[in-house]
Structures are given as C-alpha cells and as structure tokens.
Amino acid sequence: MNASFPIQNISDTAYGVAIYRAIESERSDALFCDRFARTLAGKRGEQIVQLGGGESAGWLLVVRTCIIDRLVLQSIEREGIDTVLNLGAGLDTRPYRLSLPASLRWIEVDLPAILEYKQQKLSGESPNCFLELVKLDLTDLAASHAFFTKVNATAKKVLVITEGLVVYLTPAQVAILAIALHRQNKFHGWILDVISPLELKLARKKYVRELTAANSIEPIWDLIE
Image (cartoon, rainbow, N blue to C red; front, side, top):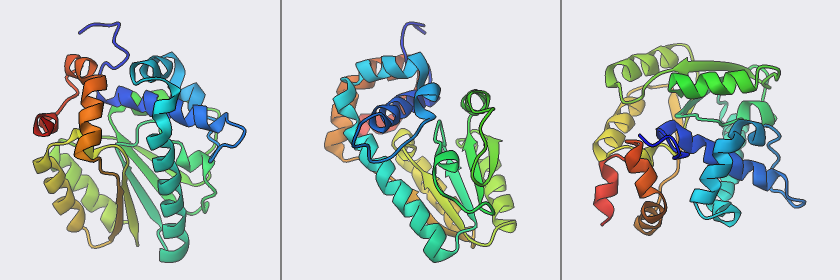
C-alpha cells in the first residue's frame, strides 16, 4: 500500500465527508454549523478534498447532510423515536450538534480505528443525548445480526441511518442488511442515500486508483461500466 494515498481504507472516506461539512460550516450563509468537523477532518480530509476535485465538489454531501438532519429531527418529534442506530457512522457529529432530547439513545457503529479516533478528538465535548459507540465490522453478518437483536430488545422505536454506506456494499450485502433490519420489529425507519449510475461513474473516475490501492472497492464498482 502506498502511504502517500490519503485514502488507506474504507473508513478514511469519512475524513473527506468531514472536511466538506467544515467548509460549509465556515460559509457566511452556511446551511448548518458543525464546529467539530475541521478538527475531525484534519490534514487527511484536506488531501481528500483535493483528490476529489476541490471544495466545489462537496455540494452533494452538504445537501445530504441537510436532508438527513431534517429527517432525523422529524422522526424523533413526530414518530416517537427513542433510539437512533447509525451504521457506518464514521465522523458524524449529529449527537453533538443537533438539538436532541437528552433521553434519546444514539448508537454509533463502525470499525474500531475510526471510532477511537473520533472519541479521542471529541474527548472534551459532551453529546446532547446518550451516546454509545459500538466497534463492529458490519460485514460480519453473525455479529451484526446478534447486535441488531440486542438493540431491538432494549428499544421502543429505532431509526436506522446508513449515510454513505450502502454504495460500498455489494447488492447481496445490501439485501442481507435490509432483511436483517426488517426482522427487528422495533426498527421503525431506515434513512439511507443511494447514488445514480452516472454519479457512480463520475466517482469511479475520481477515486478508483486510490480506493483500489486501499482495497476499499467492493464489486459494486464492476456494475457501472
């Protein structure tokens, strides 16, 4: 693996997402404010921005952030969500920056390294709700299913978020995940984003060399020739 690549593994894409949130937050007419984003993004996030075409390329991530923010808050207010399960959470900061009920349980699931990094960077900050970090490889199907069952048993209404996750899974893995979530009778809703074939082709042109070198491309990329 070439250490000069800003993307070393799949979790590193979270640094790029964070830097785009930081750039938006620093605008005079910002659509949201994430005061933690630049600290989390660090130098690696800045490198990924340049790899992806500069600051102007982040509009999609900014819009996605705004929409998911709104959907989360509406679900909590209107549907009585008591637990948010964020799968592949990366460097998301919604528990810290959104106005959330203190009683809300927010569970972030991701690989150990990215969660440990975020925990270190935000060690002096307090979330606005009860935050739980779970280190788990979501491609470990048995462990994931067991964890979903555990969450289901201790919640009333669960909202699942998979922001920027399913694009890195194969169609079969997405189907298995959907079935596993559907089997939990207290999992009330699922917020996810999908990308058009055209956008995937554009992303492939920008990132394929780095993602391939980092072993971060799943077979879904082979479907967009």
